[in-house]
Structures are given as structure tokens and as C-alpha cells.
Image (tube, rainbow, N blue to C red):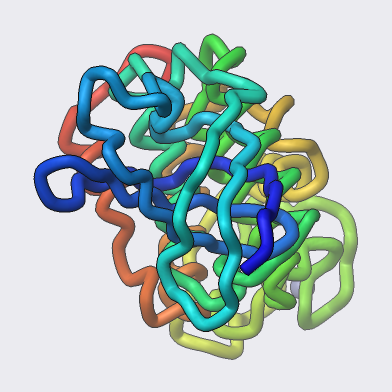
Length: 257
Ligand SMILES: [Zn+2]
């Protein structure tokens, strides 16, 4: 049994028995890690308020390979996201990112790149004033790229034209789009305007931290329909994201778009 120090983001915290808590953190070095914080439910606990969802923390624990649940010894907060933690809409978008990591195999593996993207998304949700949902969309596009299933948005997949067409159809099955001159090859298509393609290209390039920019309702609806089908097509476990269902149920949230 060795003492291990690990940086991570807390994705989930659950009560365990009368006195303890179990937390799940995403870490760049070990992927998802579950830890038990003994006595954490007591007001006098040494963990204090450090075990809050979305905190970026340094975890100190006793690592044992044979154990699913590691025993937490100490937590130091590296970065707090107070607007995310106190805002219903911001938190739901952060939790939608967490769900993707928790519910997919590629999300659970150790990845410095995915970890950086997650931290960038939290910073984007913390600082952004409008177009917050673009932070989530950007995170999704980067996640797809990291999982090896990035949509190819550079040109029409049939005629190869790179100019942005007025109208197009995203082809969910083949991972690209076809322009208005070409007929799609699959039945799973999402019609969209050229502007939506331009936003999709931008969101796949920009850091999620800088993606909070307002877009039109129409573009937002086209992007969401396409990304939802795309995620569901590639990941059985992402048929619907609970956090997004919750967020949509809230209706229009300030800063959303
Ligand atoms: Zn074409």
C-alpha cells in the first residue's frame, strides 16, 4: 500500500452510511477513481467543504490496485468554480460533461488531454456570460475527437467541395455532411444551414474555455439535434443525458444559448 498524490476533478459525491462519503474523481493519470472519505459527514471532519462536486483538487490516498474503493487521506482544493456550483444552469452543463466521462469507456480511461478539456470546460462555464451551452458543445466535439470518432467537417463527403454550402445535411452514420448538391448516403441525417456548419467547425477547434459565445436559436437547435444523435449513434450509454433532460426542463436559463 503506497501513499499516492493525484490531481483530479470531483464528478460525484454520495453519502455512505451514517458518517462517510464516496467521491468519484476524474484524474489525468488514473482516469476515474473512487474514494471513500471516512467521517466526512461529520461537521468536524478534516475534509471540511473540500468535497464539493466540480472542485479541482489534489487527492492524497492510500492506493491499492486490488481495491475498487480507495481510502482518502487528504484533499487540497486547487481551483473552485463557484458560479458553476451555485448556478443551476451552469451546473447542469458541467454535469452533462461529467456524465459523458462517467458513462463511456473512453471517458473513464486516464487521459491528460481529456482532463485538460474538462478543466477548460469548467473555466468556460465559470467565466462565460452567454452562449454557455456552446462550452458543452465544444467539449462534446473534442471528446468525440479523443474517442477517435470525430465528425469530418472539412468538405462535403460526396463531392469534396470545401466551400460552405447554403444548406447541407449532417450524416450521422458516416460522420460528415453532404452539401445541397449531393444526396446523402444514409437515412440518419440532420438538415442544417451553412452557418451551423461554420459554428460546428469553430467549436471543434476552439478550447471549451473560450467557447461561450451566443448563437441563434436556430443554429443552436440544429447543433443540438445533430450532436445528440451523433453521441447516441457512437455510444450506447449516451442515448440521453440526464443533466440535459433536466436542463431542458428548466426552460430558458440565463446565459444559455
Ligand atoms: Zn457535395
